[in-house]
Image 1 (cartoon, one colour):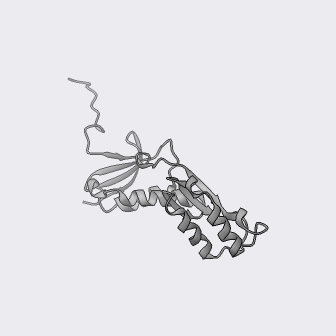
Image 2: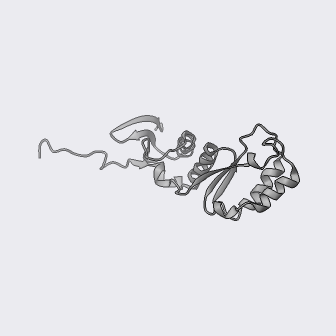
Length: 169
């Protein structure tokens, strides 16, 4: 039939990989230890241990937690480790740092768990637009993992993608 419209994208091997599909649901929280410091700036071991032992750790059950200190204070490493011991049975994942670092680590774990062998020799588009906040570092890590496998790599949508890589024949 002359003039028939053929959807070449639908008929191609092209795969769209959307990181939003991998986005783990769950609350992301900050645990600021500033309030556990003497005058908001000095860590007194006995008082700090008391705060840790009396804190309600169950409130972090199944949540993602960023352990941080908003005060300009020197916090010894053991303090974060002590918190880690108490937080471990409850939190889904935690990091020492801010919420941005937490999100980067969450996505690093997710991307490392993707079986990239499924993309061997095929063209892939990394979907660029999403409703959820995807860290830029996630796209870079995904690109790094995909490059050895894919025949080509693009970013965006099938109708308007930006070419990134094409394997030489």
